[in-house]
Length: 279
Image (cartoon, rainbow, N blue to C red; front, top):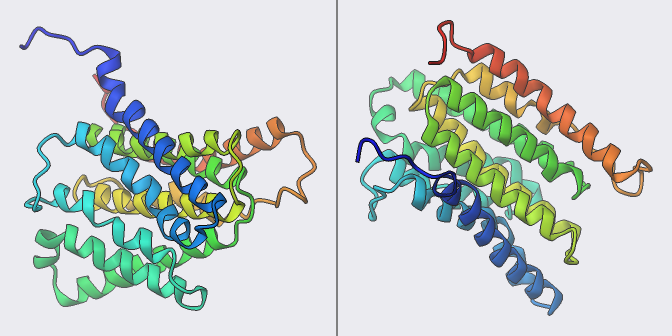
């Protein structure tokens, strides 16, 4: 009851353990399909690895999930599937396809808010969403380093969880933590299991798609500053050198990636830090 305390393990299960286990199992299956010559199936499953693992986390965080969906949070758990799949649209239309998929998917999540917007507001928000989505997918398409790009995303996601938790919503911060844990599990697995670089990058892009949906939810429903969220996503514009061009020791490359990805997050934390004490 009221006097009971929750053990650290029970708190970590949905945020870390469940998404990591789910991501390890699903990504291992994708890598095995790829190695057995079923590259086409692996090609389409890869962007869904993080979304499926994230659902495992969300079940423990959003315990009142309804299916069919009734609330915005219910829709949030389902709709990232569409932009994650849009990562696999043909390259010549990928920016537009991903942007439209992200905006329309979030419009379903934000039905109550969209219904109260004027036409001008809807158009301006849609244009803003298309720009952010297009820039994000363009930045991810430029990456060819499957070691540093996922690490950069993990750094950005970790800082965004802190920003969202401090600014507004602990449950949303936990959900971002679930995405981060799932991507981290896949990254660790690829250190010991052979996988094509392309597949690893596609999984990272799928994680980015889910993450952007949660950030949009954090802005529209939890009132997290849009400027802080844009700061958090700023490292997506960085292009990490390829493994062939990068002659640094792995630990130095890892440290540089983490530092460069975390600095904008520190600025975002400063932007949302409350004027009053947190207790």
